[in-house]
Image (cartoon, rainbow, N blue to C red; front, side, top):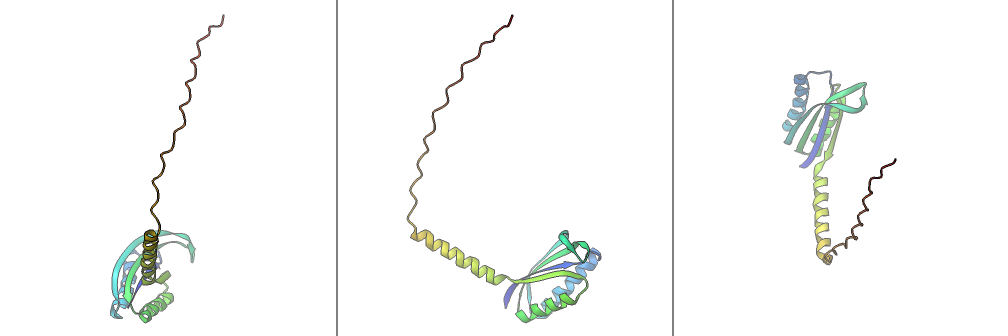
Length: 141
């Protein structure tokens, strides 16, 4: 099983309850197919960066799912056919986690090989500017 991040944008024409029902159908589909929903995070109704099908808002919902690739592909196919889903995206999250762990290890190894940095020299401050002479008041007659 692989870890996926799935974000779904549901049409704003639905009420909050109906949008949650649409999301619940996809959650059930993932769970019934043998997937494990790790994180289920409703982001609520938000403004879109650009109009999609002449709509300026959508209900956002984020899933983090541990599932087989075939199950995620089938879920994406059904989302594509649905009129209630404006957009969706599924991204493999385990690849990103592997990459970040590998990068952290590489940075740690570089730090071990690199000689320690010498202490920074205290900057010599410039001499303070001389105070300007006070101007005496002149009375004009």
